[in-house]
Length: 516
Ligand code: FAD
Image (cartoon, rainbow, N blue to C red; front, side, top):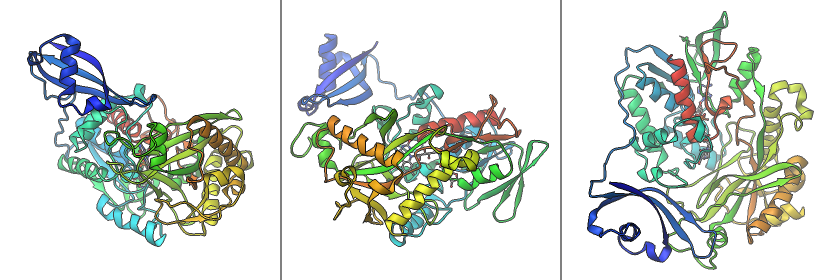
C-alpha cells in the first residue's frame, strides 16, 4: 500500500535522523518496521513566520518496496537514415526539438552559430576581461544557447503548455541532479549545466543526428511560399523543406532577415529595467527573520516582488541568490546584464532583474516608423545608452539603490560580482522616464514589503533588457508560419517561451509538428 502525506518539519527536527520515517509512522499510526520506504515527492520552505518550516509531500510505502522507476523512459533509436528536419539554434528549444525528432524516427540536423560549451568559455572570458563580445559566441549564443551559462532555475508558469515532468526527467537522464524532481523551486546551477548540455549533444550524435557548430544561418530560399533551402554565412546552401527556427530572442539578424524578406512578424510587449544587487546576508536576514548568518540548513534566500505602479507592473525577474551578474551582450557597442548562480549558490551577492512592463500598443510611439521592429529598436537604444554611460566598454553603468531613487549621482559604489566592473552613472536621469520613474517608485514600495531591501548597500546596474522577445513570429495551428510552408518558429525567439523549461517544451511541440 502507498499513502501520500504532507509533513511539516521544523529546522530543529530536520537534524533528527529518519525524521520523515518517524513522522510518517506517527501520522499513520503504524509501527516503523511496516514502512518499507519513503519517497519525497516535493519539498518547499515556508519562511513566512520566524519559525521556519520545511514542507514535505511524501509517498509512504507500506509493506512494499519503493520502486526505482521514473515516469518516463527515453528510448532513442538510430535515425541516421531518417528523413531530415533542420533545426536552427541549439538552445533549450533546439536541443529538445532534436531529441524529440529522434524519438519520432526523424534525423535532426542542427545548425548553430556559436561554439561548443568548452570553446565558448574562452569567449566568455574575453567579454569579462577584455570587454570584447564575439557576436557568435557569448552568454546567449553557442551550444545550449542562453540556457548553458544561465542560472538554471527551472521554474515555469507554463504548466498547461506541456509536460514539465517529462523535461525534468530528461534533464536528469542527461545528468542533472534528481533533486530537481522534488524541489518546489528546482535549480541546476551554471557550473552543472555545461555537462548536461554536453550529454544531450552526445545523445543526438550517438543516435544519428548532426550538429554543426560555428554555422550561422544568413538566409532562406523560399519558393511558392514553401521553404526550399537554408543559406549559411560560409556561402553554402542546404536544401531543406522542414525547418525549426529556434534562434532565441537575441538573434536580431534573424528578425531583420525575416522583416526584409517581408515575412510577417508581430511587435510584442515585453519588460525592461535594471539588475539590483544586494549582499546575500541582507536578503537572508529579511527572508529568514534572522540578524546574523542564516541557519546552515537553509539555502541562500530568494525573493519575488511585484508592484503596480501607475497601472503597470514593476517586478523582480530571474532572481539569483548567491549569484553573479554577467555581461549578456551579443554585440560590441551595447551593455546588457543578466544573472546566474552556481549549484551551491554560495556567492556573497543576491541579484535580480527589476523590470517595468512595456506595452507595445502605447509605449514605443517615437519608434512607430520601425513598424513591427519598434520594440526591438527601443531595446537596442537602451542597450547603447548603457554602453555609453558605462564608459564604452562592458563596464556597466551603476548607482547605489537609494541614490537612484533619490536622484543623486553615487560618489562611490558597493562591491559587485559583475566582473567587467561598474561605472557610477546618473541612471535616474539617463533611463527613459517610463522605465526609470516607475522603477524608482517600485523600489520604494519593495522597501515597504521587505524591510531592509531599500538600502544604500545595494547597487542597481543597467540594463536588464532581454527578458523576453520584443518580436513574435506568427504560426498557425500546425505551428507553421502562416505564410511559409515548412517554417516552424519555435522557442523564446518566436515568442512562444520564456525560460529554459518552456523553451524545451516548445521545442518538443515543434518537432512533433514538423515530423507529422
Ligand atoms: P536560446 O537559448 O536563445 O538559443 C538560441 C540559439 O540559436 C543560440 O544558441 C544561438 O547561438 C542560436 N542562433 C541564433 N541565431 C542563429 C543563426 N542565425 N544561425 C544559427 N544559430 C543561431 N531561463 C530560465 O528558465 N532559468 C534561468 O535561471 C535562466 N537564467 C538565465 C541567465 C542568463 C545569464 C541568461 C542569458 C538567460 C537565462 N535564462 C534563464 C533564459 C533562458 O536561457 C532562455 O529563456 C532560453 O535559453 C531560451 O531558449 P531558446 O532555445 O528559445 O533560445
